[in-house]
Image (tube, rainbow, N blue to C red; front, side, top):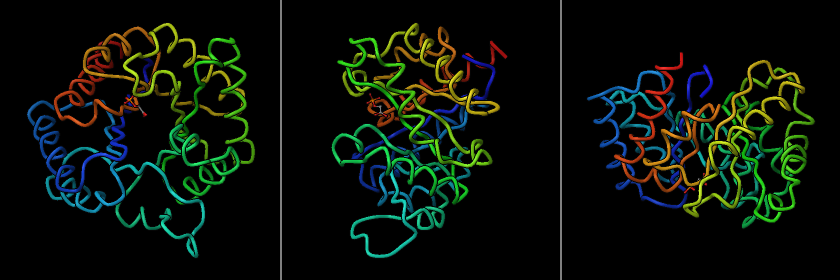
Length: 260
Ligand code: PGA
């Protein structure tokens, strides 16, 4: 792990209604109060319909976690049936937004162009954008994954003013590792983290933050964080249970405390 403060985001995807979400956050909050994860920035990216209840409990119980959304529409308002805007999210104290998650790109036709527009809308609204990049298995096997993620970065960041760079985190999420139980190895994570940081520095990012996602769980988090140079994790399945998500937070906190 690098010397930067770790960021761990729980991506609940389309799981947990607001009652279940409240329950999970309550349990997580208790674990975090009993033994704080002092150095970790904790974010829960809940479904839209859970955000208001989760926001209220985080506020009233003073849990040290921030709220994230899994997606947003790039437009400010108007005739976009079924969509949600950045200002709606801001009203609910949402500070983080995932942009271009592979499930949006693959199943909901989110093109590179829409990813770029969404990223721009998020940072202009003063929210943190988590730009998801990553290759599918065939691209990894053909050894062109570095070029592939470079192209994803270029199209997302190409038109963005440098003054917004501090609001952009990059999540390396290879598709072959998402929800498969096969995580990237620490060596693979290390290679991509350092590659992405180099690419971002070349684009004038001063302190690029790169996290990893793909089958991170309570069992592999300590090894992944200890043996790669990653700044944190984007966690799907293992964020749905307080104990496993908390174990991942602990692994990051312990590692940071040792390395700092
Ligand atoms: P996973 O999902 O941890 O269930 O693999 C990660 C993600 O899609 O963000």
